[in-house]
Image 1 (cartoon, rainbow, N blue to C red):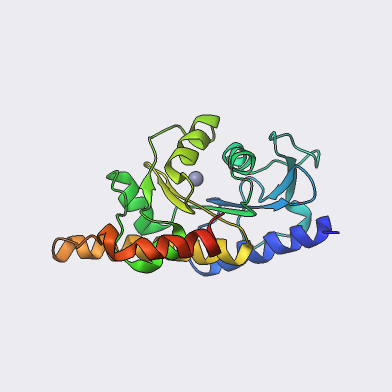
Image 2 (image 1 turned 90 degrees about the vertical axis):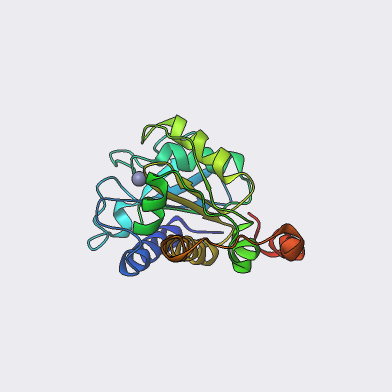
Length: 215
Ligand SMILES: [Zn+2]
């Protein structure tokens, strides 16, 4: 049986790692892990500064977005997390960031087209941009779901990124990869016209994605 303490411990470890990697700043972004044995998940708290995050501050919620651990305030984007868990049944871990280059592209509403093969194998294809919706609402969650489709990463318009994975390790990798691709694409736009890969060149990789990394 998966213990609550283990999942809380895992979130704290993951949150500090993502913070140390510079993908997230204090009081920004949020991370959650699904409890596979119940219709529940665990999420980082509101106004989380990462450095002082401890297991007792992690908030336990059900998939309808109700707080199970009374007296604790979850991240303001908990509605988005619960919506994704309800609709994407293989998703085990969700990371939301305001990482710099991804957010920069989200401000100009530019999606990241397919520019590298690893993007298809790990994320499932282009990183699309959501329609703009107000933060902390069910609407931003719905917009995120649409932008994600069956893939593992999307940009949230004028906001940041949303990344999911069927394991914690996958979600970490995908959060890093999304920001790396945003930086590469931004840089490529500065020096020329990026060459977008053609479907005939990558169609086999879509099968790899479906087999190994789709969530
Ligand atoms: Zn946010």
